[in-house]
Amino acid sequence: MNVAVLFAGGIGSRMNAGSVPKQFLEIHGKPIIVHTLEVFESHPEIDAIAIAILPQGRAELERLVKRFEVSKVRWIVDGGSTGQESRHRALQAVAADCPPDTLVLVHDGVRPLVDHDLISENIRVASERGNAITCTKISETIVVSESDEIDDVIPRDHLYAARAPQTFHLGEILDLYNQTAASGEHDTIDSCTVMRLAGRSLYRVVGPTTNIKVTTGDDLVVARAFFALTEHETLFGREASR
Image 1 (cartoon, one colour):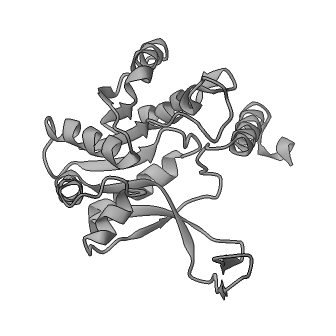
Image 2: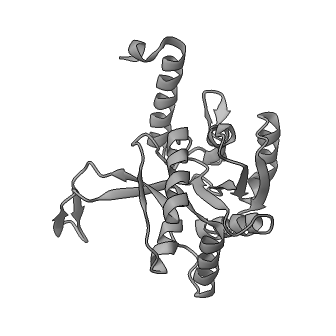
């Protein structure tokens, strides 16, 4: 069984979008969270979807799931005060109904440009090797700087940015989340960090640079441009977009 675990608990403090949480901002007539959900909904290997969201957004999310007929949504849980707590609660909800060998694809609700090929590759690699971490090759020069002086320039040949989905066996990742919380740590940045802190090996899946997380206003502009390009190619063919 393969379950998408989405967390959409952010309030969009870096978006400057007024009172509208970033997951509910619209791109081409649909909220960002709906775009993300529809990719997993339409993927033939995804059996169910769990979502963690802040309590104040739950009613709106439930309305959107019904309106856009996202039938694979099986769990909607209240998110916590951090991303780690939100992911942990969603994993606990899935574990109450699914066996430990279930594959869970942990993904940001505001990362709507994920595609079917990337989901399929996550499932394949995690099935074969135990987990799969979506990564994107770093194309910029990376420097270390603690003040206004650059302390070091890091060769980028082997540098990647970890993104999502991040895919695991449910029993293993939930156990590690339980251990992390019990140790007093409640604000790890993502699930691969939880795995690495426990000393587990991680396996890379290379994803496209378009698979961005919509966090700032600039990200929203970029996401809208990609959706416009995709729509144009769908209507008129790829050659017309060149």
